Length: 157
Image 1 (cartoon, one colour):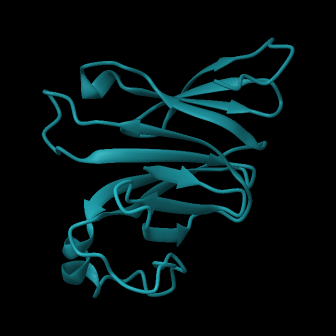
Image 2 (cartoon, one colour):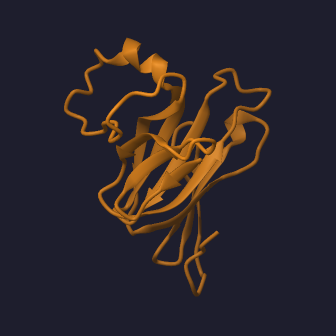
């Protein structure tokens, strides 16, 4: 199970044992929404992607990987990044998340969702903000596509 906390952490919990097997500081404020994108039949990457939306006006994209894959990527140039496993020890074979990209928003992000297109080139990301707008972006480039405004309340789901 992947959990986003009010302190801005992403936690991965092993349901069988009840242990937190991975945790990282993902956002500066509350994480209000998360969504998973599973690889489709047309997707060559085969990677599960997680998107999180937070009150810090950021939408962050993460790839779910196995913790034993991290030993190969320790020498990356992300030394200044404060994303670290808050769990004291590594749990080989359990999943972890790796930050891939960030989308800045003008207002607090209330909800984020992926579209359910089977073609990866048509996949969209929907971002609902506190100013009662839903902004639509292309998933591959994060290029702005459409703004759905006129809601009287923020879209929560």
